[in-house]
Length: 485
Image (cartoon, rainbow, N blue to C red; front, top):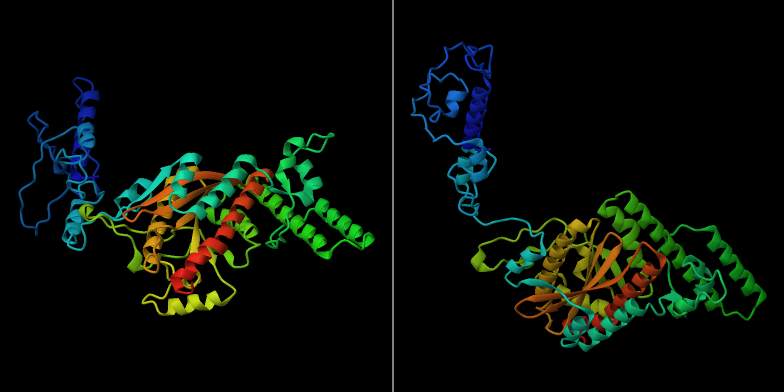
């Protein structure tokens, strides 16, 4: 609070007390001294009835320092407390850009001290926390909401294979066909509220399909007695029918493990919505687990927690020159990145390629897991919907810097990068495109949630599609970057 506001407040209080005093009252106003033991009494100061020229020094009695050089008092025109607050500063100027220090809640001495350090930097350093702020970048990032029809046209004009990815995911979102494992039909129907009467499952029969791929569980599930009983039944059936293939029995066990994990995630989600947990807790118990489960069938793809990863200084984004701004980055940028970690010769080629770079990292960060594992899908998570704009801003910064880095290796003009935003239980999919002079992030597709069984199976399928894209299309692009294709 500046001295002008203090002066106006004192004046306002004194005026109010004067107006409340009854006519003819001879009581003197008491002035509270800051040091009652040392300050001597002083006779009341007489005023000529005009209070408009009272200063802060008149309102608070203090003794002058005898050794100090006498200085003339600074007389300011009196202003009401209301007008001072309304105008925002002592000069009647409410424009922060005119003098950014005038609203600094420091004393005038501190303000003067700060002014001497202005030679260091006069640029604004407000954190980028809104998607609109991404337009200030030298290469702006635009989030564009599009209908599925327009989104398909946008993607198809850039990359036909990415259009195939979009179609696979969008068709599941629209029809939910084949998202549930046929092998667990008898278990899942009651969970979904069907199978209680004869032929009442016709409406959902299209949702079941044979799951041929074996699944590896993430090791974090809690067993339920019902599923344990089901395991025993499978074992008994396999023993009684010696001709049952071993891989079929193992596949059913894998599917049961997956179901256990999904049910536990759904239960945890409901608990976390009822009693608010931290973002780290959501990542550990919900988001990270569903990502690991969806990617389990792709041994070369993993979800890496990158909350500790920072953008290396050479790749940090710049604002447009005419704005004279810095783009300060928060400690935490995004939460997860899907990494390609090949198990064949490509792994050695990537390491050799990175070793020849001036800054030895494939991505835009020196964080060790990101140095030799190309990242192709990025995930930002938030617990509260009110922080959704911040999620988009963080994703935008990460995308801009990642594109800036990998474009040094190979053209990104035909590369469309999927990005994900998880707000509590709900997940969205966006598609990022490098337009040469700017970036477009188009979407979203709502790809499921973790708060009910049907939705989490849909989410698991869509995330699995992204794992498939990483192990095929993105892998081919990486091979071109490192010169093996």
